[in-house]
Length: 313
Image 1 (cartoon, rainbow, N blue to C red):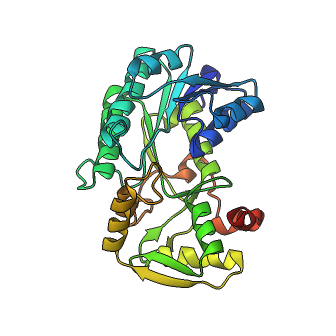
Image 2: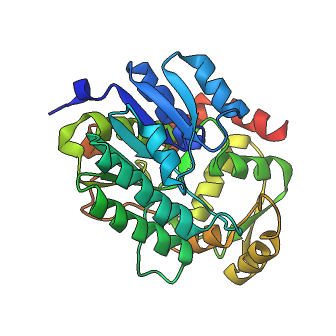
């Protein structure tokens, strides 16, 4: 049973990010006002979004500051929290963003009587994990569900799409380097999902009452080992590349060394995620349960030959 008539305005936290941008555009296309709640509403990304539609409004909000969250949600019917963090610093920690920030959004959504809340987490979230990143994701889910009982939790796998993301970064490496480092022996299993499919799932979770209060794991139609995925991307570029196994201990050392950089190219959280399969669990609710047919990576690559050109520019 759809309930879209009750949702006319949505606050999207992290709305100028990779996934948030697709969500905001999807909502506006359906005539729903999208409030892009971000720390930098005057950024080029936020301004570019607002220029696309009169239904898109950038506004200041920091999920760590509950007052700003409350102000951003004034007049909204639902909320979406896409805010995530891969590397920590003194001001931004996994606990502050994935736990406290998530609770702030959920608490204000409940206090303001919003009809829906979608919380973006990730496949493998586990509050008992030894990884601080994975543990914070799991705790965040638990806290959100406790504060907003009918929150919908979405756990996407590795996402790909037309803009900056993990797949496009891999394409850049393929275009520029004759040697391609693998995580370990490249045996980790991945089930990449199109960002547009995840955005559609968010939209359905907001407007369809039957989706509320559930957890969905969102993956693409095909599962690859990391080595096989790299071969698919290499084939798309038409280049000859040598795949080189690199032990995880080396990746961890690289991540530790890179942690002092403002925007590290690799983080310990990313290394941790690559140590375990990133696939949808058996018997989990999926995209298909939301009426969405997942997009194959190969189909996306065929339709976007510009990916290589962008990688080499």
